[in-house]
Length: 522
Image (cartoon, rainbow, N blue to C red; front, side, top):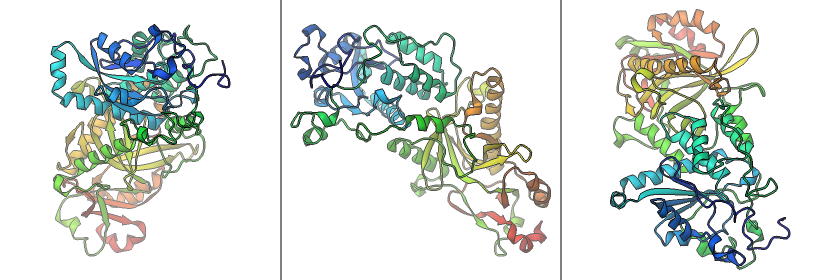
């Protein structure tokens, strides 16, 4: 049946015979088809009805009380969120246009943030302990139209980002077990494996279209929002009271062209599309509230006294070497390194992703893997590690092949522990031992086997080398000429100093045109 002949209140195609709800997935989630309000049931048998209260009752039959509903549909017509809200259940709407491709990066970022916030609220609410004693545990109900592809993809994304170690094949398989046959759209599954750079097991197969849904059926609602009859309860153009409910969305209006494929291609690009530059915009958009949390973590890691912190880029800023401050180089031990002509970034390593923070305090997410040292932490990724450094583009002088590389030259927090007050050389060694070397070992193990496609990550990472001050001339005359990227001077770093946020009068930079004025020091 085509959209042209469908009635305004016909149930979505395939909805009647689609299973209502999954078993519990990942300990807390219930995947569901969209509950429908009364207007859809004119030609529906009583036993086939499934509204908001039916969804809550079905969850309760599984020993779960729904704490939050996350609605992934691209319409406001299926039900009134107030039905859930009157039962004390919060509703959050994240619009995802299912028939136009897998969820976009920003939609995934918002979903992960909302789910994590909901779980944090549950953990801090003592009423859930009482309910647990009565045999009921909390659940987050997630639905799209049918509760398989968009819902399954979002839940798999969440598990990849919320658990200690990403295991994509495992989560795809477990979702299929909880809600057979699982994610059945081949392009959704492919996008997940392309995105997370993991090898797909031979046992992780495309399950095929389930019997209740033919290839010709659409995930679209019966009517687009702009086709809703004027004056309808869910008409988004005139019903202001509906807009004031707790359900909300910052997403673009339905029908706008999606950018999920471009975002995915940018996230996994190997740089072969054209010449690289260190100022290239990397990564993907981040949900606004998640951006704020990342910014707060950066400030927390850099400032020893939270009272002095301001929500602005906290990176240490050098001052120019001049005759007025040359004497600092003789007062305390200094280390020297080359000044790369690159782009400054802080890099925050979290379970839910790697975040690039530039000097404008803009936050973007890239998909990379940063394991912790295995002997000390087991199989786990970094969570709460903040590095400082610069992005450069190395060019092989013979082949002209380019490689984007992040040069990490400082670290302010490691796995949730603030270390900014430790001496500089100690912090630099933590970068090497806790970040760079474990990552090298992981890539050496997984690269040859193809278990992880590290070649598709947006950049590589290395520790920037610092040397005692007396090697400054050797760096200029021998080391810098051999670099594969541009350098325009030197950086002089106090060897035993803590990390000093923002302007640091003892952190000195010197550019080549000033060579004559400081030549006697070298």
